[in-house]
Image: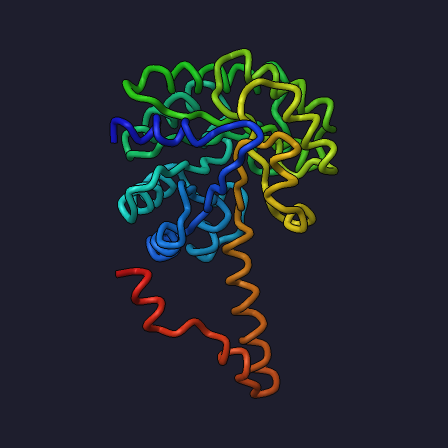
Length: 269
């Protein structure tokens, strides 16, 4: 575990992004590892779905820590924890979340700048103080631990790209390791964000950005490409499509494209 953070950090190269595979259980973790993923991450939304809950502050810190520990145990790959807003509003809670996360074996975590419930962004000064406390805790855990600061207000419509950049630069200044503003308006905005800092930038590949290639994200300057809950929602779409066809019209043809059980077994062995 001592070197897992170093391994994870070394993957982050601006302009040469790796794919951070967001998974939701040991099986999906093992499959991504077997297919060649270099690192994994939890997804707060995908984890909530496995518990029969909607996304957005419905998972407790203890639940997230236990879930992350299970993902870490599934493969030898570095794992990042998606820990929403750090599970509390105040800086001390964010710092505690970092310390507890490091104890689970995670290579790092990400913390958002939005408040639950309601998903409103924290005041700028408080947002920076929260990241400062988290960064200080990350440096004190006794091993390399990669802290990613998220400017999620851009995704929920709380502020624009200019404000996201202002926040990311402030988070950079207080010592975070990686920066992330999910779902900006365009690839041009992603390029602006990547150019605004020397730190590695994570880009969320979901929604309209799923139409772009890895090479395009590299050209924009990204260092890491995460999937959020998108891969999990692909599986939910399959359940929905097959289930609706079966239950509404007795059509089972969707099941004909199922992955053979023997192939699944081989990937999980």
